[in-house]
Image 1 (tube, rainbow, N blue to C red):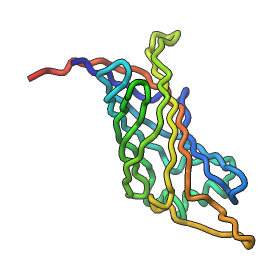
Image 2 (cartoon, rainbow, N blue to C red):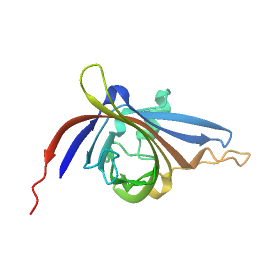
Image 3 (tube, rainbow, N blue to C red):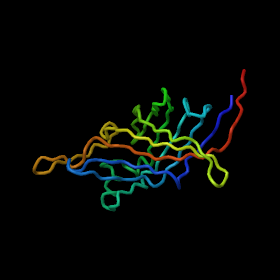
Image 4 (cartoon, helix red, strand yellow):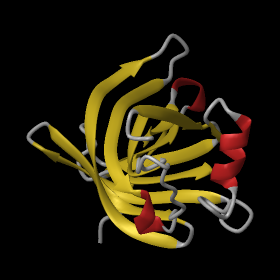
Length: 182
């Protein structure tokens, strides 16, 4: 069986999150440094194994004080937990794609299921083969130990527990290997 190995093309990928602030608006943040790979024996990526990690120090919400707070022990605790990671498998159920696996933050691992929109495979002008994915899902930050909380005088929650994850990922095919059969 042939297996294709792929890596994330960071120049054509984006890893972001969105969280409600004061219940009235949404703050968007990005992980600017990340890496990931996939191995797939099928062209539609069904059964592909996926590994991903992001550097906590690369958080960017376009506001330095908020970024520093997110990196602090109140949230991600970047000094002690410098990366978040994910390992899982893509499942294709008749065109309904899911990415199911273990997300780890602050040494807490939970299984998550993310929705996947597989954009297909195409060649680029430089002879590389690329595959595109839009990945979305929700997690409860408190499930991973990101438990800082505050309430305003009026009773509004400052930061929602629910966090939306949004990844636009382009993979670059690296190699195809032939697995030996027993």
